[in-house]
Length: 576
Ligand SMILES: Cc1ncc(C[n+]2csc(CCOP(=O)(O)OP(=O)(O)O)c2C)c(N)n1
Image (cartoon, rainbow, N blue to C red; front, top):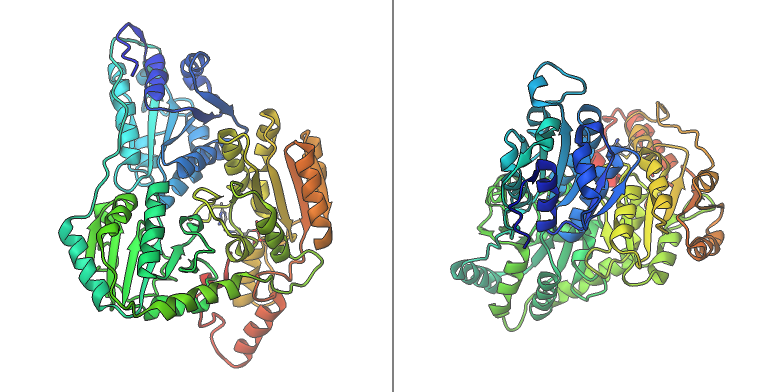
């Protein structure tokens, strides 16, 4: 560990502290408010990615935090920069991702005059973060940065925002570096595990649901070994697909948006639910419908590293405060019942998953996204990384892609649009040799498509798919369901995305039919350049299961029958 004790500027001490914390990459949009940090970064062993908009920069940092489990780091300027970065802070909060956002701030003597671009970061980010603060004493920079990292990683990870007054950064300090943060692992007690053992001995239809952050290879492998010994059906939660091998005979599918109805039934019928790592989110609990609140009417074992998550909504029969890895390792001591009563259920669960995900459904239009996903599924290298944002196009990813490695899918559980391109840039910066594919809707893509320029600037050969249905399709779907035939503010007139790619110096091609896709993808790959494939999708193809016309017709039938326009099934059930 470096133990700087000589006099240096606070900006230098800050950058030194990032190095101590093991930061190898950071993302930024420059600002005059933190010039001294930018200067100190010139000599630091940190790869700096300069971006085109803070929304993209901060999402890159969030994606890095999500993929590595170590805080992603982003620097932005005061008011406008910090405001632009807010979506990523929200993603980090909802997705339990460690993120440290540094915001250049006005000089201390000018504070609270509403000086140029001044922003009260504590107030603005207070409810979005685990800690939002402003440095006030230059000597305390190492302490504050170290605490930011510790806070971002502790228990349930999340975002931290630190404002850095410009004059403070320029001050000389004699403070020593703080030690690197090593987040505490919390483990189950022997009594927790004994109680869990009794519960399994009495169970007839158990189900495990894996989610959240703080997983690592060891924990994932231990969970696979446990599933095998107990023949336990395993589901993954929304956008945590890589936590379990989809081709493992215990895998039952993902409890996300548009989940397999047979898996939802299985969740509702389970007499023991082992919920590991994730919070009890709206999407994964299927709109809080899996169990009553606080109920939960079944034996629920909730395992989470954050004590405050346990019992927050559902009252678990057994609450275990533990990191998923430590918990999964402790499962090695449990002994399965003999015989195991649910073996046939587990086999059926996997058969249901395969039947649901194996074959693309027929679609209106010449490009079938299901067939595209299956082509990618069969051909992408095992260590490929797929990133996406939000939109109905993602339903084909969730249903047909198979992520066989931890970190193979990087997408926001907060379903924030505009994530797919920045996440891909971050992943390719981190893993220059892996194939990184970004899947986007047309609306989604243009929310942060400017970061394609960042991919070109750093020579990152990401392959970006834009599924263009000339619509904010998800919202159009909701409109057709609730206001049939009344399209309002959801149509889009799009540019030629292939030409867009070429204008930035990348490779671009249009895909008009499914049959053209393989050749276009291979040409993109062979170009070695950042690429965009513009996929022309029929807006009728609104989900793998239904069309816009079918949704509209059903809504009109309900209206004619005098039934409420809002259908019985929750609106989120079929979106994205
Ligand atoms: C930042 C953000 N703004 C708005 C929304 C609401 N929203 C969810 S999906 C969607 C439309 C997505 O359209 P597109 O990317 O074209 O994909 P499609 O649904 O057509 O496949 C919108 C506006 C959101 N999730 N995130």
